[in-house]
Image (cartoon, rainbow, N blue to C red):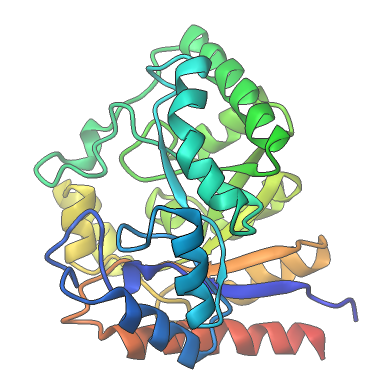
Length: 299
């Protein structure tokens, strides 16, 4: 059996939500890191509570013996030039580089409704046609080449409420961009968008450089679509949960990653209300589920 050279990390959103500060906003960073480390997570992605200065970040991570996995970057290439984006990303990129991360989560936020609680998902932005798609892809290629030149690969995050949301969007983006543009495969977002995560991962495995492990409660997802909720209201209603607590087939997803030699992080990222889904309990559930599946593949 081939080894499965992956590490299991977590996003702090299980404890404190950056987009909805009322969800865990008073939870201190030290508690988040302490509990995640105690559960067994080897690393954390960044959140707003983390230091923005490289040395300060290194010290706080070292105190809890966890690594820096990566960090979300709010890109605006749909509106900005490549030169403007390179200037904007500088401090964040250096924070990642100096703390050992080798991928950067790129989320396109230009025109996105993902953070607008009153705006339904049906009103997400979409590129008008081929000209816009091709122009966007060209800029993304150039920006990805730049981040790679700094030692960090670009992991493009398809996301509800943004330009690249659906399976069709992901397929088109991958077909138009060069291999320097890596894909962040998010099992929860692609499922909520109506896709089959196993099929999508099989089709794009060669481009996958980062993985977010998020489960979906299908009844909530169906109701969100039927009533046209916003992304944030869907989160509040519990559309997402940790691996093993929803409908996503993580056994098959990890098998695909294993068989194709994926090396990198499996990141538990399941934004939900910690008052309804206690942070430690659910973070532990997600860790145990992925750990059991990983051990089975290695045995």
